[in-house]
Image 1 (cartoon, rainbow, N blue to C red):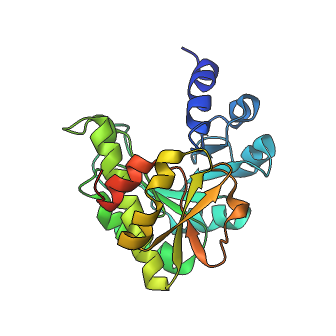
Image 2: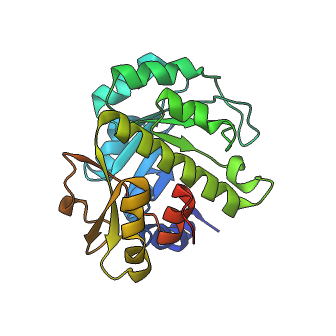
Length: 238
């Protein structure tokens, strides 16, 4: 199956669920296929050419290995995120560098451009990266090789992500809002429980991607979770 065929199959599945579809290495194909963005490595298409290919409305992320210098250059050039790694041993691909968690801590303190941690990440070791300040984790084998299967891994990562958002927001004294599609009756049924048990403030919107309808100035906006995922993440009864 060629890359363009895979895009045709996977892209609508991701976008229908409010998930950004980021293509690796190929800004030309990302633009042609209507992907949400592209990720480029240091040996791939340079950032400026990647940006020219996909435009300013799409995401461009850049691998920076363990280099603070490369990350600063990418951020100053306009990258939407930078990626550091590998943080742990991985068999998915041969890592060019090993990166220390201190790089994530430094980046989180110094910069506002989001950072992604990559390399050997599992449910067990991801919390240390998230606590250090990683905005995202890139996971492959940690999902597919999970002892209880991919579904269990995704559920565990969702819970970790959600709990971290809640902790960070509470520390900052911010509200947390959960956007709920107007036609999602199941999600609407848990709104009162979310407010009472977890301090979340559900926000009814016409669609999960209409972020402008939510007051982002005073709240953290979390999207793309189903009612079932909300219950699991917050350990609410079914």
